[in-house]
Length: 247
Ligand code: PGA
Image (cartoon, rainbow, N blue to C red; front, side, top):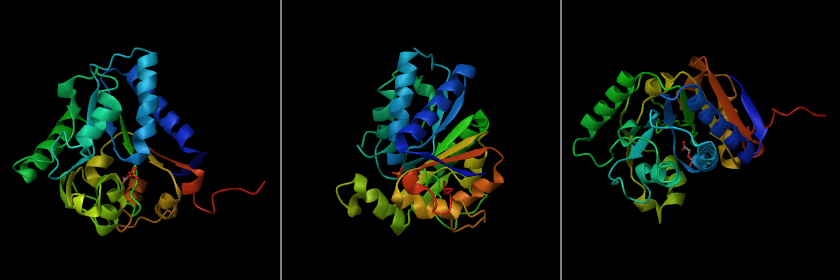
């Protein structure tokens, strides 16, 4: 597993979109593990363009999102349901609704919802590609520092660092939900292939730790060392200092 500097957000996002597109072209009934957050916005823009330009049949594609905030309705502007509608499903409205899966953050029984979601992921079989962002604290999904590598989909408490980082999407920090339903680390590792993206100076510390080669429960993304098929693409700003070669 190696961190690769693709130079800029555009190229890394386009590459990832091409990989999602190629996956569906190769296998129309592909299972895609999808992520949200600022990092992924351009990936979906390029992906939608590729789908439109090539009139791709996505009716058999199944999608599974990593996580959802607790307490937000599906139509709340900052829910991950709504994010996915905005960036993908409203832009290319040919996915089959029953094949699109996001945990329900305002379910009456949140633990039962988490269990249902985990079972759904397990029963449908491994994702062909799982895309991932990374938190400034090294989380993947909402698996915060200290998460067990055996973790499955469950209700999680967000750390101060995550609440602060995500407050940029809300009017103020108090509005950021304090909990989420998130796939666990073991759920994420069940994917066949994983592509992690990180852009910007704020991700540099997390990527530097991820590039260290030392598995550390305080940096949850380092669990990816245990996966045989992981690609990590960053822009120049998120690349560790010692990566480049003097020329
Ligand atoms: P971001 O979030 O893309 O909004 O920076 C990534 C993450 O927290 O996993």
